[in-house]
Length: 412
Image 1: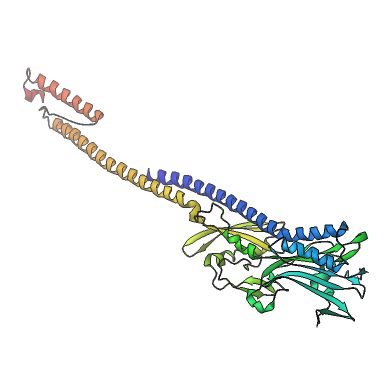
Image 2 (image 1 turned 180 degrees about the vertical axis):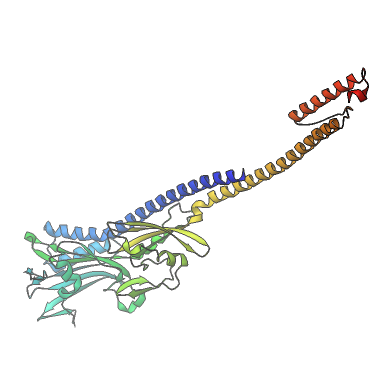
């Protein structure tokens, strides 16, 4: 019975465990979808701002050749959205593409106008072309149309397509702030003006501080009981969002990433998940299991669509999902052990009673073998043994009855 109970419990509990873990995986997968959608929706604000300026230019509401008008439009956009870090418009007169697909510009006019946030507020910068060079105020600066943020989106391969940058320090903010400079993500796109002629490249930077707050998203309510850890990483297992305010950003292979020192061991182990590098837009999700310390954890990764190679990660301890099942298993085991002990004790008592009844039967048959027919009283619990003993008593009574008429020696 113990073996049968153990087999039954194994199949029931194993099936329940599989069902719970499948439900948990669906929960994490749906959570990763929601978080990815929120992050993408936040980042999409930058693309929307590009679209606003692009529509105003295409509908002749804004003339990109009028720098003051352009400056006012950029200033309105940045003041209307506190999440924006900068809006930069780099312009030039296009003359077609060269053999390598790079945009060819006329010698002039070229320049750049930028509106960005600094510790002092909203700042406007203009780089203008003068006497064959470029000046920012009175300071000579490089040609802004030779910067990769202009040449790449203006090339034939990416012309008219929004291109996202990775995480980076705000280039236009004061470098005196050091590590206190804002961290931004930017999108750049070539835009056209009148008669669909190239007007310039618009770059919009959005502050990444909201992305850092992704770990504060609660999947199961806001009462503090949600054990899920949420973060964003890349496909090389490098963390993008800070999990604590003390996490430090550093440049790794020209990318801005969170320093691995001081990270939670659970996050560190999650970032080592095999197959992370294989997550792509075609294969956007991955679920796995790992061990950290004395606990097992489950993790689900999902690719973000709006960025280069960013991935949302959701981690939770396995016992969070299986805790009630473990308690149920323990209770069932205790009840089962109690039942087995009761069955064993009852079996021992039953066996002893059967042995006593059998002993009485054997004793009576041995007495008859010795031709002793004296009556005996029997109080036996088991009906079959009791009926057999009664049959022996009837036989002895018959023998004793014969002894009234025939000498007992002769009866024997």
